[in-house]
Length: 374
Ligand SMILES: Nc1ncnc2c1ncn2[C@@H]1O[C@H](COP(=O)(O)OP(=O)(O)O)[C@@H](O)[C@H]1O
Ligand SMILES: [Mg+2]
Image 1 (tube, rainbow, N blue to C red):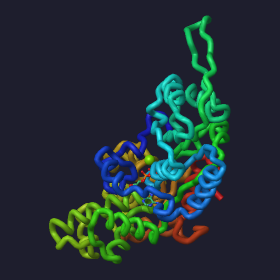
Image 2 (cartoon, rainbow, N blue to C red; image 1 turned 120 degrees about the vertical axis):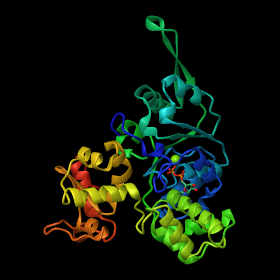
Image 3 (cartoon, rainbow, N blue to C red; image 1 turned 90 degrees about the vertical axis):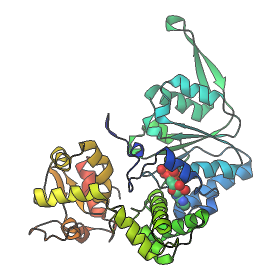
Image 4 (cartoon, rainbow, N blue to C red; image 1 turned 60 degrees about the horizontal axis):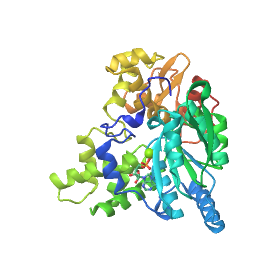
């Protein structure tokens, strides 16, 4: 992430935003799966992790360090808690931005007990000196405590008991290679299929003690942007509607009505997303248009448009980021009920996997100068 850019995780308050604020975190805690078996979907990561954990339990040794990467709201923190619970040990929680100095990290590390799990959220935001301290701690289970200042300073090595680092990152590409190499296992979480989100919703409804019809769960899942955090949030809003204006049961009518009140459209776009599409198509004839101009048109900061609205629009194949600027695809025109001008690029037509807008992602990665994902 660029200097000064807004971290999506800090943007609470937006119904379909994938970050969580304080109030939301409390609501989420109640819905978190506590065991690996309860964790819905992500079959591949779940299987791999299960092997890592069970092998370590059988050997009675701390498992390799684990890195979890993926967009916000997909279950990284949840998995970190599950790892500690499955190992029957305690979890110590910190984050990259919370560690200002290497000394802060040294203090945390030297207080770890044998076998504990240290969760470092947003590990890509660790300061460089802390990162270097972490390499040594992860590899040699040692911290060098610096005593004194200036020329008289010396480092006293302090041995640490075996422990496991679980790192979480939304930007694994930003992790320096030496740090990435210290993790014995990396699990990449991807957006959830609608059927898995439906299961998340049904499970959460059960925990909240509300009755939800299958059609309603299906409807909410379809508007949740592949993200369990958003699915749980929309579920709570539908519950509010059903309790205040309905009969308490979450049926299709309640789901549709509630999501209309909150202006979340059938594919999960909210007001900002639609404003961006609208400006792009109606004002700029589909683009290409620069980010700053586009942001000005919708009355937002460029960072907000770039980190909050764009990733999903790009993923859904509605917007493409090209070296010359943002472009609306045929799907965007279609979604607004407008006719696309001749020659408009269709994301779906070129998509490698139908529905996943691989082509749009590839274009996006190329525009950013990154290697397109295979
Ligand atoms: N696989 C899953 N099954 C059930 N609930 C999930 C799953 N993944 C995430 N959630 C729920 O979504 C919310 C956000 O998950 P979290 O682990 O905080 O995401 P992240 O740390 O990746 O941003 C939590 O309330 C959690 O209960
Ligand atoms: Mg998290």
